[in-house]
Image (cartoon, rainbow, N blue to C red; front, side, top):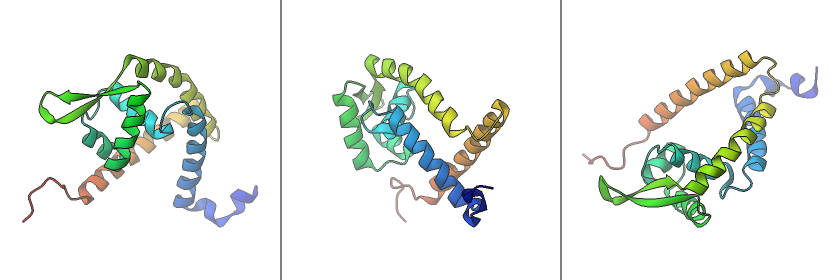
Length: 161
């Protein structure tokens, strides 16, 4: 039994989530070093390439990024030629975030490196089947958490009583 295994914290969910998060962030930071904003920049670029969430505000809310931080992050990604802000045809006040060709090319190259980094993070699980089961359960928990967080946060656009 290792020192970590004998630690009473090792059975604590918060400790386990924190340990996994720290390892993922450390591994991902090295993987995404060339992306402005690191892992967050990658998430924004990937969502823009998939044309998810369209507007800057919707994207910030989905990723859990403060609107001000999102502005600086998008400025950096745009400066690097990875994304563009385009007028939203449905709402001329809003801007849609779109990945450029250069951004899509960078994403393609990062895919293999990301899978390698994820393999390092999941190395404690022996079988590919176990890794897929973990991913499936984690995604289910994340969707539940996102729903719970969304319902707990009042809609700032809703009229007040």
